[in-house]
Length: 331
Ligand code: PBG
Image (cartoon, rainbow, N blue to C red; front, side, top):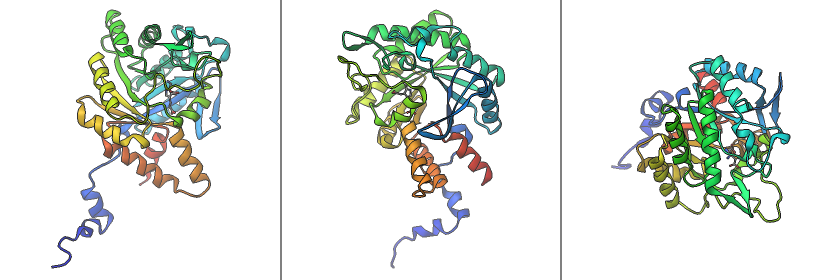
């Protein structure tokens, strides 16, 4: 008999294909990143991220309600900090009435059941654009972790459900967990960016927040002394296991598409939910190719989303979240 097996029987039409499909996407899979700016009535398109915007608090409120009505139940907040408030220590990050702290309250007021996660890193607040304090030509670890813990506490006090340290300094998850417990925020969770690589795919994000490292004579302009080397795989598992020990409730792999192997490795290794971040550069690449007519936007968007889920992601952080859900609703 030839052929011995006919696999194509299970691919005959959409009915049979959907019946045997292993992976599905729903609105429950997504965490939606949102960029917030000062002002009123501001909805500012990010040049390198077509159709993605920075919102002032009033329009953030509107956007969050729209997301909720689409079935999207979790947001990850980032703020663009005015230059005059930036310094090397990221002092403004600790302001209880700062933009992030107000944004958290705005989202909770507009949509009380929306899960709010907040980015904890110094770069948007840093006059030098690093995720920690710079001293003697170095990004100093322990003092930076201490500031991050204090920053996380102000987020918890403002009502954040999960703080998300994205800096990659050592020990920051433990510092944050300890301070939160000490101050009575035992229900505030931590989603730690545990396997975050020093990637060139973050470019458009740094445009969005104007947070790129600046030229300094004695400090490297990249983040390679704290974010991970993209040649490494075992190190991602090591980083992740330690973060879980230190108190991470959710761990994250970032970027996404170029790191699906890492995502699968970690999913196989750990017992906590695993998030992935389809980062700004991944979004920009798809948008640019689609604009040129070289790729089918919607199909590529769905294919990459599905790839994250198939590779083991429990949570997909993506600038495409809203578009994917809209597309699914129309199908
Ligand atoms: C800040 C932070 C970055 C991103 C998320 N949090 C930038 C960086 O590490 O330089 C990137 C997200 C994206 O590119 O979409 N620590």
